[in-house]
Image (tube, rainbow, N blue to C red; front, side, top):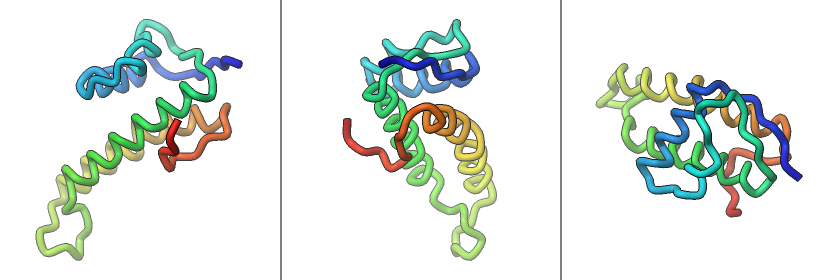
Length: 109
């Protein structure tokens, strides 16, 4: 059964950009950045959640020096992580979790 997940066109476009960059063709097909929602089933919801988990891991690997106690601490790394995790990641995953019983652990589809 498909459900409508309310998301901003900007967030949809941002996730579509990630999917395009990584070649996630099924995810690209799901996202229409001219709308303020996506209509998806539970399998597709998990695919979108997996994209967010993937992108979260990419941010953790790309910006590893976010902790003040790290000898190579870089405040810019903390800013990048916070911007992503408290922004797009939070908005997208919360909207999906609200309608589907899916966690952020990136379980396989």
